[in-house]
Image (cartoon, rainbow, N blue to C red; front, side):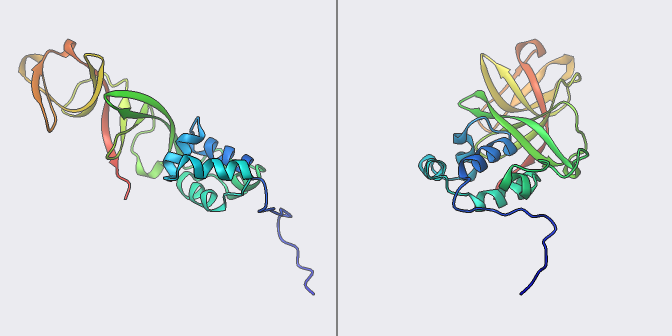
Length: 197
C-alpha cells in the first residue's frame, strides 16, 4: 500500500461542480454570457444548458479553455488559486467586438500570447465571419492599410489608401470610392489577423 502524498491535496468530484466551473469558463474567456461561451465552444445552447442544469463537470471544456487562455487548470477546475500563473502573465487580455450586419457588439475579451504581438497598448480585437483581426485604436496618423471604419451609421472593414490632396480611397471586394477624411471615421487600424482552422 502506497503512502505517497501528492503535492497539493486537491480532490475533484466529477459528479458535480459543473455550474461553478462553467461560470469560471465564461470569466476566463472574458465573455459576459453563457451563450457567448456556447458559440465559442461550437456547442448548442441546449448542450451547455443541460450541463449547467445537471451540474455536470465540463472537464473537456476546461482543458480547451486552459490551452486557449492560459488560465490555470487548478483555478478552472476548483476555483482555488490564481487565474493565471503570475501577475507578469505572458497572456494579454484584449477587448473584443463582433462585427455583425455592419454593427459592432461587445464580445468579451480575447486572450492572446504576448509573443504573437509587437504592440500591447490601445488594442481591439474585431471578430468577423472569417477571422479575428487585431487592431490599434486611437491611431493618430492615417496610413495605407486595412481599417475598421464607420460611415452612414455602419461599421465595415475596408482597405484605405491615402491619396494626394489628403483624400482617401476606400475599397473592399464589392465597392471602391474616394472621399474626404471627414466623410468617414477611421476607428481602428488592423495589423494582424488570426483564422480559426
